[in-house]
Length: 552
Image 1 (cartoon, rainbow, N blue to C red):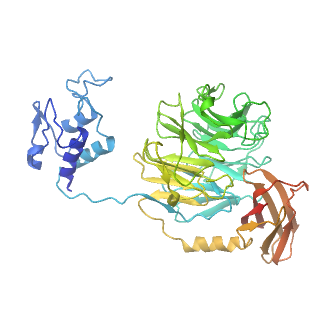
Image 2: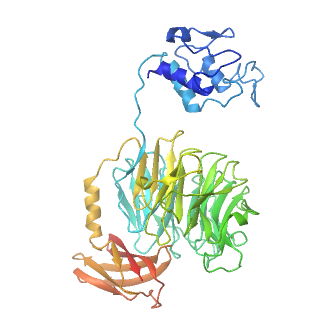
Image 3: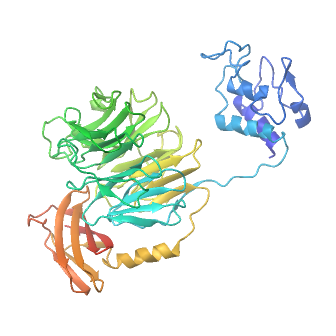
């Protein structure tokens, strides 16, 4: 198909097909040559000014610009004709842009070069023991991620290569966001080291202290409005006090406030400007919940910088089951937005089409039994994905896709597994990223394999030769390989929610070589911990490795 034929196809599609009758001006584009089309006049107006797409009446008619658009609510006083096509849905902006470019290029009849279809590919980010929890890009090439191995990593080539900018042995990193190429923030689930800041693109990170007494005890979500204004939210633990905090002076000072009146747990936050924003989580009917089984979702909106909040799900509680809460929030524009709903046994999202005033619960049924959702991302109002743990035991990592705004879903594990966050660029989207067990990229070009960075990753994982360790009952044997010359060795443990179980081992100048640490299944205070999966992280000076340990 050549470009002129594609223009005709767009016009036919806009009116319902090539055989659909067209009133008023008629189907002036049918059965006509390119030269005749370029010379055509309608209502005495020259359709096309070759070389000037924006100035052509043809393009103005499609956009509803004067002298067209008289039928539109915001019509110009100079508009005397209706937008084209009159009385029908407008031609999508990408198709108008195609026509405008065609005119700018001289209205050629050259063949359309088929564009490569974007797909998801692994980047060369390291595979994390549990997960890469968050990712942030300031443009399609430069970005950062934080993972369960305690590393802040950065790429400057779209994921081709990554460097570890900071390793924080005893810290569980949860969230990351940047205002620009220099100023960024990382939130953690470690109570005594909750927030870090960089002012030089991540070359150096410093802990933010002091924080207000009423600040969230952990930082689950960060929303950076600009270099001065930042919001943060937490916690995902129902036995902690949910709270938010913000800075309006780039982090020099912070204010904080409790959110217990609105929620029992708070996770993700998203602000469109200094005053207007959202935070999602869940609320239990009881005043001091200790478990998630009595929680239902909340989607909270503020228009005054967090002074007051409205729960946009109020009155809809019966639509949502107990044991479900909001996890991540994703708006594609001012009207259409989505929230992933975490639920250990089922999968669902919340959707709005009116700017968040009302929301509906939408089941995710994909044929593979996806559940325990966390990540959510959409290219537009119809095409999107969800991902997360995939099952109640956190082991499947399923992902699902929709092409109709969530009405139907299919399995989509090829996009990546254990997804917790999506980020996209462009309208229409041309590049995107998602983080899960590693970082994935949505692009028409595959990421080149970077053997050097992968080899370095393989070296570090030799600290813990077994990525998954099955315990014997409530105890486990953890094989370790200690490098020669190690000055300090530590072993830390967290549960799947990032709750600290403590430091199990801390040795100065340990013996090198192979050894096994016998874990009794207790925390650092000697108290037995429940059955389940745990993240253990071994740090030997500046080398870090993590594994998943299952206690029966």
